[in-house]
Image 1 (cartoon, rainbow, N blue to C red):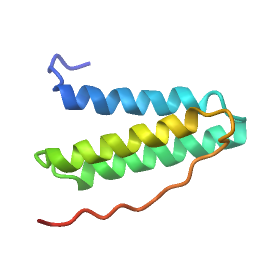
Image 2: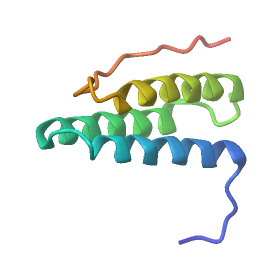
Image 3: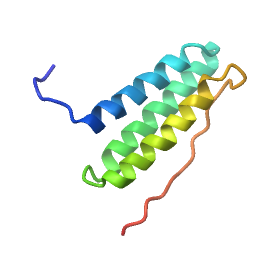
Amino acid sequence: MGASKLSGMQKQVLSLYRGFLRAARSKPIEDRKRIEMIVSTEFRHNSKEVDRKNFQYIEYLLRLGTKQLDQLKSPDIISLSSVKVVASKT
């Protein structure tokens, strides 16, 4: 792996991603695969579409993701749905 240092925000994003994958492991196998696919797709999409200097929007996505992860950790929740969030260009 590269020797580059990660910023605090990059570490938060990776931690959130790992948290989703850990939470997915506690779900039934069919739901786990679907959750992993949604999480992977969302993170890849945002890594390509969100400007890395748009810290305010990235912080918003981190807060949103943290709330979704907290919900996913609940034993009553068995799956995850994908929601399209459109960023304003301002």
